[in-house]
Structure formats: structure tokens, C-alpha cells
Image (cartoon, rainbow, N blue to C red; front, side, top):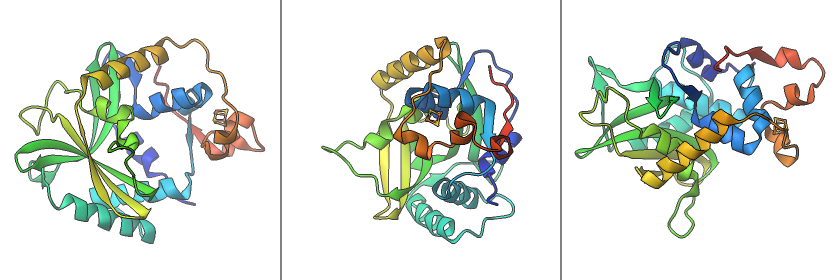
Amino acid sequence: MAINRAAQREALAPKEVSAGFPISKSELEAYFDCPAKYQFMRRWQPLVVNQELQDGIDAHAILAGAGGLPTNPRAIKLAGALGDLEAGYTLAEVGGQPWREQYQIVPWQGFAIRRMIDAGGWLKRTPVLIDYKTANWAWTPIEGIYPKALGFQPAMYLIPPPDPAPFKAWPERLDFLVAPSKGKSNIVAYERDERDEANLLEAATIVAEAKAFPKVQGWKCERCPFFDVCLETDQWQKKYEPRQSRA
Ligand code: SF4
């Protein structure tokens, strides 16, 4: 059985102490995909993830140098491609250690933003956050725009925390390092944008005030990690563990 390192990392994360409605980019995306999925995500942790996600989790673990490194050959290849892309940056360090996999809870506008920053550093003198993305296919632009770089994530990650260390001022740019299984690796840069921040605030407010969580059943259910609990399939309880409440 594949090990779910996301669950492992979550278990190691600091407990929430800040006031504010807790929200993460995954939860926001889930709510607007299917409100029921958001509800299940807050209550249940799948014990096993699909191969594509496992490859991404393992590639992140390799880059972070976590103990017991995965031997997954697909992840090793993806991590190598991401490492090549990262070579152009001066990576941040704290106390002689690489500044990686930083779990933060940031108070913002009545919310407690939860985010995991993969790495950060400087491109020449410009401070930059770095996010690793693995995918089946290369990211492609439409009219020069990369839609995949426009999710809630960059707006959420570029909100400054109370303490900007290891930077003097929190970066205004997030670079996605994209390593696909098929196609060319590339770097897609996102610059802080007030319109996206306003959109993020509207979206988070809708989720915080939501009173109903209907199921949006259809083709997306085929790839939904909460299919078993949602459809109450045979012995679904064996496929999840309860999450600590975040309400
Ligand atoms: S299985 Fe379908 S309806 Fe149920 S939570 Fe997932 S996407 Fe929503």
C-alpha cells in the first residue's frame, strides 16, 4: 500500500492557534468543484491516493530530503526535472538549513490561511516563492496565459505573513516549477495581483458563510478521492481516517 505523505506532513504540522475561519487553497478549490467534496475533505483523510498524486507527493519528499526517501522511479525522474529547474535560484536557508516545506497559518481578513510553501529564494535579487508541480502533461498557455497558474493558490501564498523571514519583505512573485511526465518542463511565473486577491476574499467569504453542501454528482465523481464515503460503498470506512476538526 502506498504511503500517504501528505497525511504524514499534516500530522507534523503545528496545531492551529490563530483566530479566523481556517481555509486552504485545496478546500477552496474543492468547494467550488463540489460543496460536498469540501465537507468530506474537512472530515476525512483518504488512506491511499491515486498514482499521479502519489508521484507528486514522493517527488516533493525527495526534494525536501525527508527521511526514508521514496524509491518510486517516476517520482525520482520528476524530482530530477524539478531540481534542474531550481538550479537557477539562490535558495533561502535558515540556520544553515534549506528553507523548505514551510507550513504557515497566516491571519488575513478574518481568515486563518493554511499553506505549505515548497521553497523560496531569489532570482538574481528578486525574492520568489517556489512551488513544485508535477503533472501528466505539460502546462500550455492560451493567448500567452497559463490558466493553471491562476488558481486560488498564488494569491493566497503571496499574502504576507506577520514575519516575512527569511525575506526582508515577503515576495510578490511565485514561480511554479512544472515537471510533466510527458512533455517539456518549464517555469511559470505569477506576479501578485490585487484583483486576484479581491477574488480570493470573495470566494473565501462564500465558503465561510455556506450553509448547505450539495453533491455535484457526475463525471467528476470518477476521480474524486471521496467517492467511497460519498457513495457509501462497501466498507468505505476502511479507506479513510477521521481528520481533526477545523471548524
Ligand atoms: S463523489 Fe461526486 S458528489 Fe461526491 S463528493 Fe465527490 S465529486 Fe462530489
